[in-house]
Length: 379
Image 1 (tube, one colour):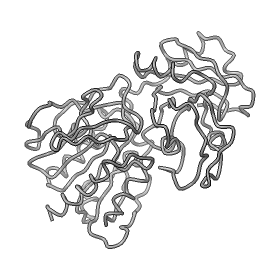
Image 2 (image 1 turned 90 degrees about the vertical axis):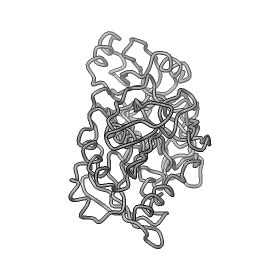
Image 3 (image 1 turned 45 degrees about the horizontal axis):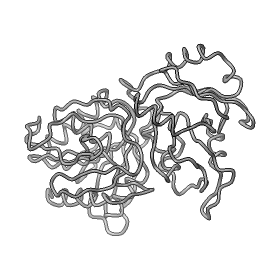
Image 4 (image 1 turned 30 degrees about the horizontal axis):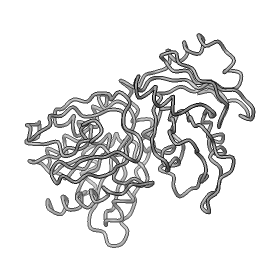
């Protein structure tokens, strides 16, 4: 990513790896950026999206036409910085109007060097990505936007792809920290930070859990030394096929029969630990309106998603795994993608979506209660 001066009255162009281009106006920082073009269907929660580490090296296209209306604040951030590689909106708000707003969205994008583009037909771009699939993209603004399309396209083709990307080391915490239980402490949990969002340990703390957030490279022995009642594997960016270390770490806890709960990337890690494969979705699930069915209860929840990979697991009944019997527990009603796994012979389960969703919906936040019950049962 390269960043230059002010975005006022500066041209910008978006170039997809299949050659489609769209001209617009510079938004945020001026310069050049590359990433995987993905779209998010949320009508709200753009601050949580921007600061979610799972969006590392992705250029996010917002399907909602107006973005930035409520500004930015320090309370709603999922991490200490914006992680998206680039930002694409149709109509950025000219002013922010919310009693909690402390800054404008444009200010934070410029301040953190996030190159964006506005004034393009994001609906047409979303339809293109839906039909052709997520792909590499470049945003070029200022002088860079004046280069030939062939030159810009060559730069996009030279940028790294998401398949095979190992990004955990980029986003994990460098030092362990503790989010203390709110009220009386009932459990001690180790949260493996693969790109964790701030709301996740908070949801566990609300249920009486001391949450020790540890770097992804932490050894199983160091985690055992904490005397934890359970281990949580977080969301995160990149290709789960590269996450051999996380799979090996989870396998140790499954063998020890320590309760395990995984979300998003953590769901894919559990799948791999059970001996299953993963694959890249054509355009992924990103937004806060995805319907997911619990195959045990039949209940349908509206859920928040951010994933471009999925677990390849057999539907319909129990299957044999590396750690005994297991089953698919949840599926997406839009496309039948696996949205959850449950082990029968060891205390472990996972979901592909985000029950901690700060911007909503909150249909699935009871999964943290289920994690507490799992730890209490083992204890």
